[in-house]
Amino acid sequence: MATGIDEHNNYAVDFIEACADIKTHLPHAMISGGVSNVSFSFRGNDPVREAIHAVFLYHAIRNGMDMGIVNAGQLAIYDDLSAELRDAVEDVGAQPPAGRH
Image 1 (cartoon, helix red, strand yellow):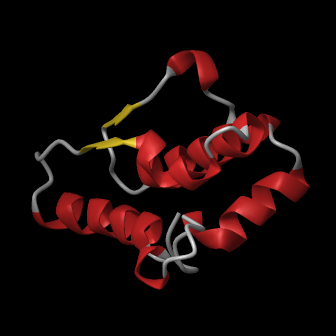
Image 2: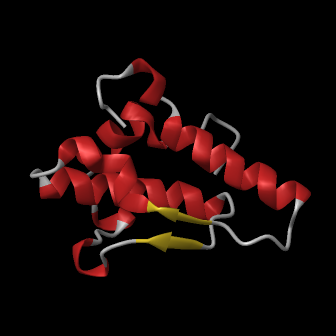
């Protein structure tokens, strides 16, 4: 997310939508993903990275992701994020289109 490379702009949402599609067509399939990959362009800015991870996990889990590979010691909780930071992260590209969770 927010790498400055156009083709990366929708990677997080694409993954979230793929989770939903996989669970629809293969309901017993298990889905995992490396969460830190979505925030690598914010290395050194831990509060933003943690918010990106929390928002991504919030939406990915609701769309079928079973396991995220995370650093549990640096994991923020979605509901504890400030509304301003959470909304900014979702605007950048971690929220699937309306109609999805």
